Image (cartoon, rainbow, N blue to C red):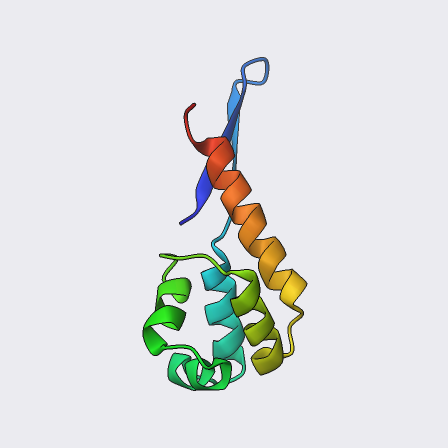
Length: 99
């Protein structure tokens, strides 16, 4: 899920748009694809079910601290990266949601 921020600039007669807030599952999928790894292989290395990894990659669930540590061990990407990506996404979604 990508969120779009629209900023009207009436004096210039334009609307500037930014696409932002990529779910960390998209980054995870890109990372494993770049390494020639399958979701099945990642699940095995992390000690998680394939369904769990697939749900993250499809953006259905977030990345918990425990999963982030498992990803760090399996992929060599710091757990803090995964946790920060997840928090940034959740914060962007919350900001974009009506109150």
